[in-house]
Length: 62
Image (cartoon, rainbow, N blue to C red; front, side, top):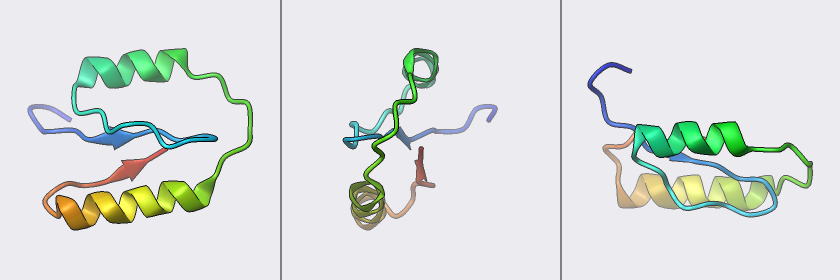
């Protein structure tokens, strides 16, 4: 994504704050340890809330 803005929200047992800095996203990706227990309901709620609050964002939930 050359020169574009980025907003990523990670989730597992909890929904993490939105990251907008590419270096922070890379650090988070490198530190993730998959343990299961994903609460998809809260992740979808967070994505909907993000879309309502900032409709100009492309929301990516992991």
